[in-house]
Image 1 (cartoon, protein in one colour):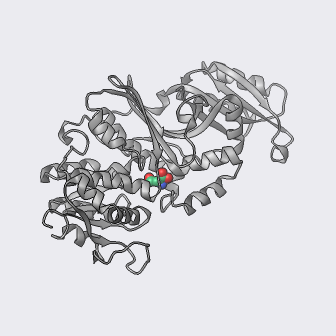
Image 2 (spheres, protein in one colour):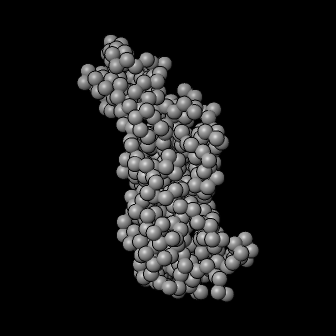
Image 3 (cartoon, rainbow, N blue to C red):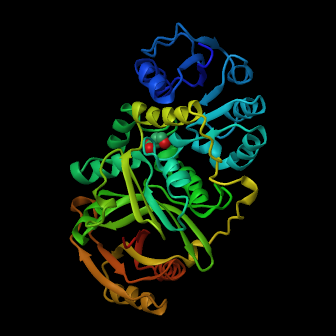
Length: 434
Ligand code: HSE
């Protein structure tokens, strides 16, 4: 059939193999729904001999992704290799330069090079689609680029990393260690090849950079994000949050402020009653506050082979149907420069946990330092010693502040550390009022 849309898939890991399998098992459905057949005609991956449980006999094998990207035998280059640099970058550039549409799940690549790649796609009159790059199976790009075109967004936030949410949920519900939870997430195929990207917050930051651009019509600013991961969150914090009426989630947040746009990724105390607090396990959720539609919350699987392949194939269908939408929701040249609001100006409540030396006046001195920094305390609670883990000369104090600034909290904690009343580093977790 002449009108077959021919796909070349680069990368046959969890998502790549699921994409091939789903396209094969749903071939008739795709033809009916897209009005033309769609077929995987070429593939490339690192290891030709590995059994991926999918039939590749009808596909031309390429050893080199860049050669496949330039091949006349494909219409669409589907990049599922990952990585912000080569070979993914050159392969995608080659495909676009050769007039191929590109579909990618590669948030690291787009966070670093999205603007230049979008410009190239526009120049060549082809699509650069990336639904699977942000929040896995959730159709957030389509929602923001198309369905919300009449809206001005004020605030977008969400749980955008399944691995982190899986770890935090199991730590809380099963009192399991961080390491055991991470090992399970890797075994289940949720984590990135290098899980540092997940647990240190970079994967969330890459996704947030893409959504911020769509939300505010600004250039993608993947390097201009405050990022803090979940590796320092302890079971003590998880338990304290529970007692205080919060749950801890790794949130990506972008919001307009008087001084610019805040882009931040950090563990966050969210009220147990909030919608986002109900999101457990590998599920992701993205909430958008916008002027016309109000608040929209989308929740669904943020990782996993079939769920992510579902998003990839949604992009395939748009191309098969001849639907083209600008990569960034508008022409690249119309995007505004991104102006970063400094993190030290961030305003909100804070949870602070301190190991305080058990001396007369220590708590009073801490409270004084907070007052000097103009921080009003909602509560200050001395916790029971944590079994054998708490040295006998220390007590644990948990402080909750009213709204204040990041600068004030950092200044106060520096003074408290200088005073010598605390052991080790203070733990500080931001509270988001949702
Ligand atoms: N490793 C990611 C996650 C999946 O855990 O959400 C794809 O981004």
